[in-house]
Length: 235
Image (cartoon, rainbow, N blue to C red; front, side):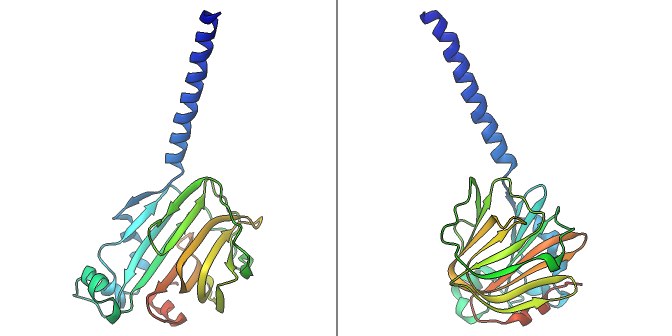
């Protein structure tokens, strides 16, 4: 009897081991990899006149079909040590945090179909297993594993304030105060969730260009308005 049980036990152990290995492989394939080089490919988004005020040390979270880039823009800081500005002289400068997130498979999305929904209760959102970007930053970003978009929209929670909607030939978005927001797919299901600590003045744009689709988020440590869009090349 014992001799019969031992092979069965070994098979069970092997199956469990294979499942664990497959789960690890899938997790690696479905998560982003951080690097400090890829962001340079996206500097074309900024007007030449302000590039000298973009930090020279930025970063990206890279995946096969989407790339999330993080920039720091400090007006009138050219020639100054950026780390010194951040750590010692924050009160003297406007420090803009800029996210440019490319979704390579969404170039066919129509801007007119993108919904911007204010005053949505987001307190009960629970995402399935996935990953968290910027877990230690003031904008924690949770991504559902295997997220899927055919169309995209954004929900803002009840503590957020949509102050102005913004539209252009190839972009659409809003300006306001954001506490929490989620990117939803064509079924209205949250795929990506942003939690702001604390709530922040924010400009968000959905942009179609360069044969791709981009999400652009700008916020700052000081008050600003939608004219910040002028630093971007959105032609």
